[in-house]
Length: 318
Image 1 (tube, rainbow, N blue to C red):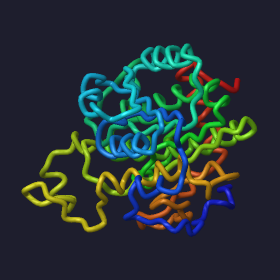
Image 2 (image 1 turned 135 degrees about the horizontal axis):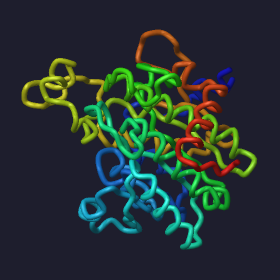
Image 3 (image 1 turned 120 degrees about the vertical axis):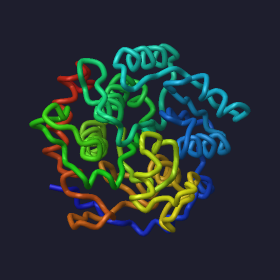
Image 4 (image 1 turned 60 degrees about the vertical axis):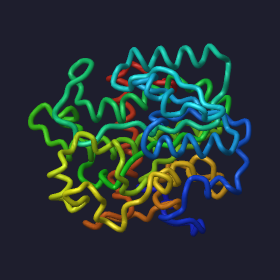
């Protein structure tokens, strides 16, 4: 059963709010934020907003040289190497971080891939599920001592794309027939269910988790989509310019993850799916707003957690 708290709060923010505006009334000075993918697209804007508010931001990156170049001159930012598709890389990053003795106030799983050609990583895992979900699942579990000590908020980047598919437990790696959009949808549903179960397990330690849909945004996330496909979808014109008034700027796209990570309006809450800087409404119709019940179901969340623990060999609560 979906949480009874899965409904809008009336936050006072909206689709056009920016990350900087969210943080204007929140004191994050001295907090430590771990933000995957924090050097590109909306992740970079979230990093810059936190840094401007005098937080320390650790940016784990698959391409640390590119991350360092993108964030050169931004105060309070540290770059480290992390490939979410490589479980050994996740382990090394987490071990190095824990060895520093620091706690985590905010963990944001912002990095991800979308609609990729069929790609297998590790022991044959489908790359979108492996990167978007299993990499972040393992990261949070391996960082658990630092999260618990910090009473952290964990934010998982989902998407309205979760509406394309529930978790396909009978063929989670798409071994029978691959569809790039269904695989993306499954991964984004997994991101939401991860937050549901992490919150259920972590609340007693003061760790609360949320998932967010950042909105439609043109960023490097679309790098695997041919231009002609995005034209056919009606996203852009032949020159690559946005055609959808609903698309956000990266600064606006970063706002919901920053809001979920810091808003005092969410005190005492958790396991919720958010959009446009507010808690989203439950919506099982074919429209693109709100969250489907399959992405908020605690039984599905617990089942996914057990599967993820089996696949990765990591479970901080076992």
